[in-house]
Each structure stands twice: as C-alpha cells, then as structure tokens.
Image 1 (cartoon, helix red, strand yellow):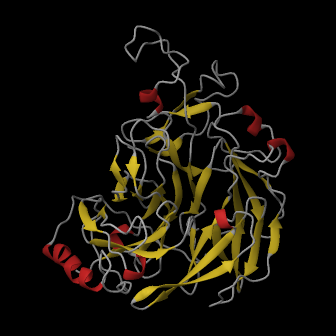
Image 2 (cartoon, one colour; image 1 turned 180 degrees about the vertical axis):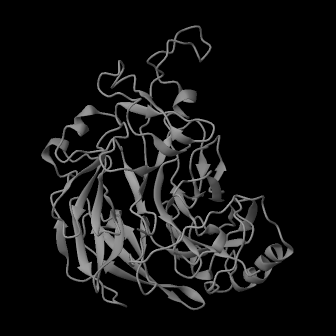
Image 3 (cartoon, one colour; image 1 turned 120 degrees about the vertical axis):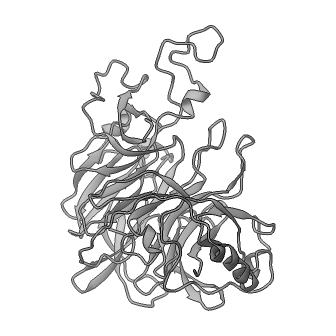
Length: 475
C-alpha cells in the first residue's frame, strides 16, 4: 500500500503508453507568472500549492530546465543561496517547499500534514501547509532511535502511525490535526542494530523500512551489515531479508531473502503485490580470465572500475513470498530492456555456484543503473497527480558514492505500470542535481518521493536539507 492511509477500496489500474515529449506554449509561459509569486532568488513568498492538478495529459520524461523556485525565508541558506535549476517534464514546475535538516523518509497524514523522518537527530518533523508561506514545522516525535520509515494504516475505525526505529517497530493511534505523536505501542522489538555486542557498534545499514499490505500484514526490511558476506544469511533474524508480521507484531516469519538493503517497500494499491527498491553491493571483482584494462595482464579477481560502474544492477522488483533474490551469492546483470534480469555467481562468495544456483533463483523485475542507490518510492495510483502519471511509481535515486563518474542516481525517476502490474521503461522525472559528473560535483541527493494529496510530488533531500515540490502547471 502507499504511504498514505490504506483505505480498503478497489481501483482500476489504467494502462498508459509512453508518448513523445510535450511542449506547449502555455507550459512555457506559465513559469513566468509563477516566478513573480515565488522568487528563485530571494524576493517574494512561496506560491500556494496547486489544487486540482491539471498538468500534462501524456507521460513525458524530464526535458525542460526550470529555475528552482526558492521562497525568501529559505533563499539565504546553501545550496539555495545561488541560482539552481532542475530538469523536469513539460508541464511541471519545481520549487523548494520546506527546509528540514537531513530529511529522509516521508509520510502524508490523513489531514494532509507531512511527516519527515530525521534519523540523525532521533526525531520526526511534522510540516503543515500555510497559504503564501513556508510550512509550519513541529517536532512531532523526539528521543527515538534513528527513526526512518513511517506508514499510516487503518484497521477498522482506528488509524495507526507505524514508525520504524533501528531496533523496533512502534505504532500509535493517530489523532487528526495532532502536532505530537500519541502513546507508542511496541509491535516488533529487539530488531538487530548497531547495539548488538558482536557488531561492536558498527551496522552499515541499520535503518529499517516497512510497509503494510491490504491484509494488514506488516513487512519489515532487515538490511545487511556488510557489502557481501555469508554471515548475514546465518543470523536470526536473517539480515538482507524481509520479514512479515501481523499488524500487532505477532506471527513473525521470514518472507523473502537475498535482498541486500531493501530501502523502499510499497504495495500496488488495491493488490497484494509488494515491490521493493534495493541497494545492491559494491566493488564486484571481475569474474573472467580476460584483460579488459589493456595492460596485457588478466583482470580475473581484481577490481576494475569500468566493470564495477555497471555491475550489479540495482533491483526495483516484485517480491514473492518465499523468494530468494541472490545476495550475497549472485549478482544481477543488466540487459537492454533492464527487465527480468538474470543472476550470475559472485566470484568471491559463490565462485563455483555451490552456495546458490543463480539460474534457479528469482529474477529482478526491473533493473536500475548500478550504484544509483534507489531509496524511497511510492505508487501514485490513488493520488491526485496529473492523470498521465497515476499508473506508476516514483523512485528517488540517492546516487553513487564510489563510481568513476556520477552517472548513477542523483535524480528522481518514474516507472509506468500496466493493468497487469508490470513495470515499463524507466524515465527521468527530476534531474540536474549533478553539476559535473566527471568531477563528481553535485548539490543534492534525493531520498524519498510521495504525492502530497493536492496533485504535487514531494521529494526529500538529505544533502541539501530540503523538500522539493514538483507541481503541475496550469494548462
């Protein structure tokens, strides 16, 4: 289900075809009027949110460079103290909506308030829209252990807010309009984090992510502690896996494995289809007895940057009950369509294939460029975004930290879905955070993306400490 309240309703998923890019005179002129209301450099106040989205009527990829609009109260803080621009699809504008230090995951409350997790400060911030001003900000919850993902879910007449801390999952009853969290009920306790004695304070991916399905089952991602190690597959609970619980935390069991770090979890609305985004491993050694560097020496078993840059693909995939997706014994290899990707044995952990038969395991539904670091994503089916984008998923790509060039990530992408629940080709939705790929220069790193209820898409950024609003222009 989405990160909004999971109402028990059915929907029809309409098939959309990716069409050619649209450029209309109205889409080009509209930003001029908006910039008068929301200055990109410092003058004026933030323009109100667009209600009743219009926007483009056909799916288009990011192709129009827009000046990033910055409200006056936020225009003196780096990186927004100088002019910035981003590339978006025709018919959209983009602005800085709010400023939250180290903003991570997002959730929309039933009344439209936006929750932002701040793991580094142990808190959740609540943002409330204000006409012609930046949102009002409240410390909604404090004193938490690195809170990350948050999901609203309705059971009967009660609406709960589930919060994933590193060591537990809690829930609290939601009171409409409340600016502080209610009493916490621990539903899953003693999850592994850096407090484990054997980890000696080090857990590479201890932040937890969650989803609740239409059957009110709770899904918890327990990520790996390492890049690629067999030890994580032998722990209890297993790391690099997803566990399923009842909504009250009882009945926990292993649901799927071989998912190194599943950051985004969401259900296609109206279905039991769980999709995830996964950060796969780094520094895959070259597995063949060949010289690809041209120095006359075999590169077998060595780190070859140009090979590492493209292997393995990052998964955006449907996850089945009982599935095994390969980590740490298999690596995902890209293909021209980045669909139904095959797995090959990892040279270091599964050289002879004896640890796991990589041909027999589950394939990845869709691949994303290696090391793009896909984090949060949301299905837009039940949202008020422009109709052309309501049958798909928006995915935030945090970006590669060790590639030879920053070609992976640092943008927000969109996957259209057909009526059967199949993902189409990836298209860029928001790009331009990288200013020099070769020199590894950038000013922003997207983390999560959700629909805000008024036809806009909100994007968090823990590097620029901001939330952006991608909004449809009036047609």
